[in-house]
Image 1 (cartoon, rainbow, N blue to C red):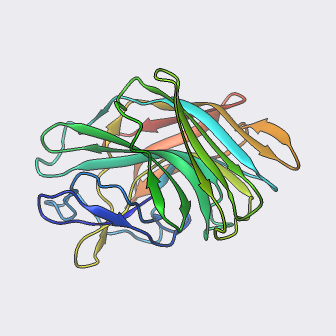
Image 2 (cartoon, helix red, strand yellow):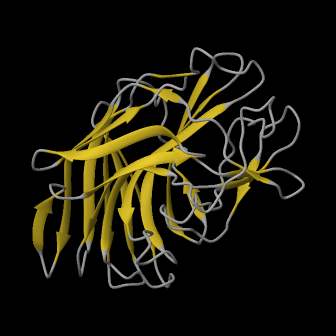
Length: 269
């Protein structure tokens, strides 16, 4: 989730903002790390958000006293879609977290990766964590993130206002952990495993939903959460979520089996 200010032809910096639940509009939040420029009004390929748009595809599980969420996925193949606009950067984000749905939109503990497919054909993947609506931390020490790399994600609370976010890369035995204290209180009532269509804003403050990056199926395995004083459960029974922008489904996901979540890209017509 990010709210970004763009400048022509340059990298853009991302700052912080409050969140909106996925069924009442696309959420935006600030991120510190730079990403590739996204053309926000490119010949009709970007659209303004509406209250009916949903920015998440994946699965949400409601519960109580949720203290941990974990999952693993292999970075999918990423590209610009076949009908891509020549001047547009295509974007997306895959993450897991606690809270942020319509029942508790004010705070989220989350970690994941962002991906950008630039007009020149290059693809960039950035790892991060955030306690929304606060500062976003870029895991810059995690290098060579590309399609085929397996990543393990884990968030854990220490009370409602503190916790940790961790990414582990088995192929390099690298671990990155960010510790949070004195944050806005979580409700601890939902666990999420999602791909998100990021919301951006231009230098004039105009919000736009940039086109979603084309990705091969992304599957969270070991999608589990801890709740009710230490009970661990899988994602089975979670609510399916789809990215819907202007009545067009861009991606859709659902829980499969006991502890997997599969998210599929939907090619535009």
